[in-house]
Length: 208
Image 1 (cartoon, rainbow, N blue to C red):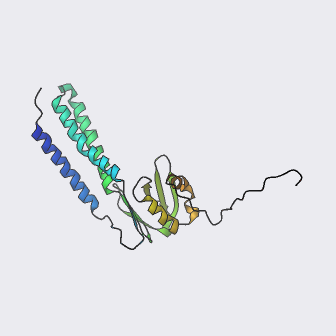
Image 2: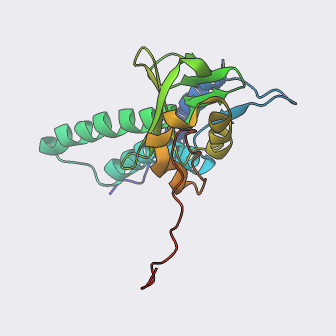
């Protein structure tokens, strides 16, 4: 068994770190900064998710390299080794890109969202037709009149503050389909103005 080429592993780790750093710098460009004294919310993936994505993108490719160096595959297994890299590297880099590039920014005027795979989209509050929640995926969806959507995961940082802005600027009738999301975050859902209020009746007694 050959001794592991530590210098090779170190150089590879530095290269991966450089790539992740470049992605982080690129993702930060154009990201808004909440203004002091104004009602605004910047929603991003949680620090735990961003850390997990970083560690996965760094450790899995380097770990596979170390593993296949210590235990070299046979010639017949070379295709499987290459296949492992072809699958693992793009997936982990894509996960990290999702973690650092995604944001949703809301102000008193409207909401802006940027995903890793699409450009930024902006809806004024009056442009939003409906707010829904997918319990299985955990996403709030803000749908505009043209059918376009901005999605926000319920675990992201700043979601509760975002819902507060939503309650202020969107009629309650348009958020009723998102009730499971409000419940999941422990917030009472606003009642539509035309929703009847049910009152408890006095128990019936014989002779009345």
